[in-house]
Structures are given as C-alpha cells and as structure tokens.
Length: 182
Image (tube, rainbow, N blue to C red):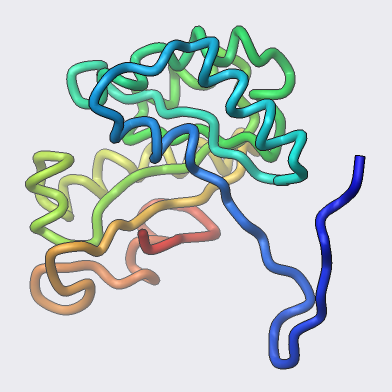
C-alpha cells in the first residue's frame, strides 16, 4: 500500500493532524439511518486510505441522533480497529462516557457549546450548563488516560464575552488539553 503524499509548505508546522469525523459528523446528518455494516466498511476504508485519526461514532441519546444509536454495534463490528488511541468517539456527558468506556474505547472527544444559540438548539441547556455537564466527563478522560479533546461549535453567536465562552475558559472548565471550534 502506498502511503500519503507529503509536501513541505513554507510557513507551516512540520506536522498537521487531520481528524476525520465523517463516520460520526457526516453520517449523523443523513436523512435515513445507514446500516451499521456500511458504517463499519466506511471506517475501514478511511483507515486503509491512510488517515491516522478517525472519529468513529458518538454515544448520544438515540432520540437526539437516531443515526448513531448503533454506536456499540459499530464498535463490535470494527473490533480493535474502532477502539485505538486514534479512534475517538464523541460523548456529551458522563452517561455517554460510561457507555463508551464499557465498549473499550481508548480515546474520547467531549462535546459542548461556545455559544448560547448553538447550546439551546442542539444541547438544550445554556453554555454554562452544557460545560457543567461535560466537565466531569472531560476530567475523567484525563484521569483515565483516554485523551481529552473538546469540540466547541461556534455557529450562531459570539464566542467570547457576554453570551459565550472563550476557548481557554472551555479547556480549563472541561479538563481537556485540546479544543477545536467546529
């Protein structure tokens, strides 16, 4: 198998990490539920194509995202391919974290919100309440050595000052070492 093509770019860091989120973020937006076997094949093909980090799924309530209700089944089909240090799953809170850990997941991404608009439309509580629900899960991922990356969607409003949280505030309150605006 041929490896990924590498080209040096002036002014860029020596390494860029691509977090492929299609199996989770892309499929959660499909109008119909994609068969778990198709999802597993999708993940396998992404890994075979040379992507280092592939976010496989999310442990969220099925009522929130019916397309990802089969998270445990997907990981069972993937076996070790779906559970490594470079195969994070997304969790919004400790309940999701517990479900992920029960499946042997080794890497966790935490989901919160940096704006009131996004928080109310997608997570239902305020930014502060959302971070409060995510923070215990973030702290546990660090203690258990499961990584700690947080998404902070910023659509629909300010991300600092009144009505929003800054990246530094989110990292500190969530107990993660890396945060990504989405």
